Length: 438
Image 1 (tube, one colour):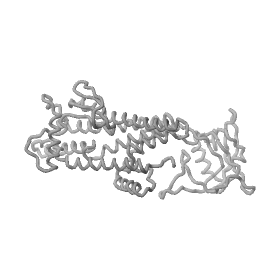
Image 2 (cartoon, rainbow, N blue to C red):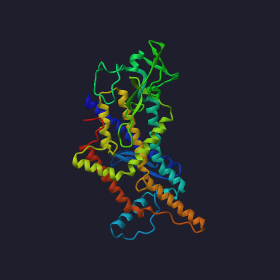
Image 3 (tube, rainbow, N blue to C red):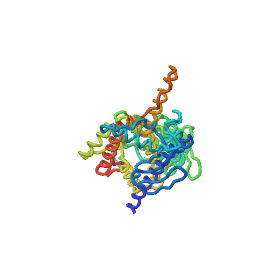
Image 4 (cartoon, one colour):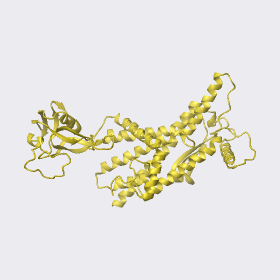
């Protein structure tokens, strides 16, 4: 059964990845067709063709390797004006790129080419793919946090400490000299539901904790609902050294990654964990926070890849916040699906992984290097700047930017991307990230 659940997690992520790639390409396809560009192919995957069907002038299909996708637009670059012999490997690459580009320009459709579009239309076409992933991520995170909810402490009491133990104590039983906890003295019982503290209604345990921690030594009026009836109790938090936690019960860390310990009010009660629905705005906020983290990872990607290589050779533990390949994401999805946890908990984690994956696709594709979408956007903007400069000084409009000249750089970037992918796949196979222990 565990093996089937593991496989189900991988399948879930593969389907989610396929949909994400497909929608990314639709983000390019729709505006390209709306602007009149001839689109010859819409393909998911690379390599040998598995299945395809021509609808109108566009061939839609799937290829063997589900590692991405593409649409083939007519005339991404200006048509070649010379066809002399190419000498040298880089000139040969440029000539091959120009020949391939020329083949996309169908006879009689010379005016339906991408490079002839106004700059703003070219930017919209190329930005459409990454934006589709961002929109999908926002939808996923909104469903996750506003529909399912964020797992955090609820207002239902799960446990009441008998006594107050020092912070960091490993004792499991109270000694006669240990003072009774304020919660026990107040008569709070497991199953009680917090209604208000100090006259302030509370809807989460985090709200109740904040009130208690801010009032050491003060007697507070506590209203709880027990067996359907409200009861009013009095409770006086004691001052104790405690590790501060967030809404989900995880320790807060300082700049050095150490738990934050502080003298705060303490009563000695614990909450039942549950999914608490957040406002709709929390979905976009979560997507924005994730994009910021992914962007930070991209800025330090060479260093992080070096660390991955070192950990692969030495067998050291990998950074759980470091880069992953599709293999690594699949492994984590399988492990999450096979864990002994409620189905909703597992589904929430898988949904969060899929949302993060779409944010990564959004950020990664905006890197301003060909062959990524960000590189095409830079080419279009540079073309616009040259034309604006010519208009400003009343000069004839310049020839369209011929990005095929950048093919050698594009090849270098492609080789580096392939090398990066290979490194991450090998690392994810032989020294995977351990998020769930083991």
